[in-house]
Length: 157
Image (cartoon, rainbow, N blue to C red):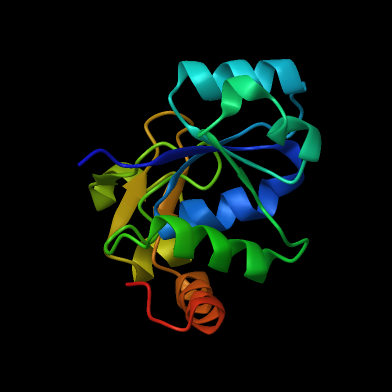
């Protein structure tokens, strides 16, 4: 079964970030014109997430657009997860900056790329092959997991 992929309009940057945290494939551009957004949605076979009622009226997007009802991140996230389901095992598996799936990397390879304390105290690292960002299981990971559990009413890992 093919994974549902999304593209979020400029009003939904926080939603895009938290969906990536959950493992959803969400393309996001903080500045993009509506015409280009529609074109990217169609060419990449994605579902457009929007708060823009004018985009909803575009016939070419029929069946490829979801109106995100709330202004509040928590409600937005609940809406999308309810509509499209929560895939297990996706938590923190994508680059939060550019959406690329993360890859494991040997500890020695990041020695000069992370702070010395992080290198000494962490054993597992991942990296983004597109933007080069390095990830590890710091305290922020548990805070994200707890916030998601509060929002969604269930554990995400």
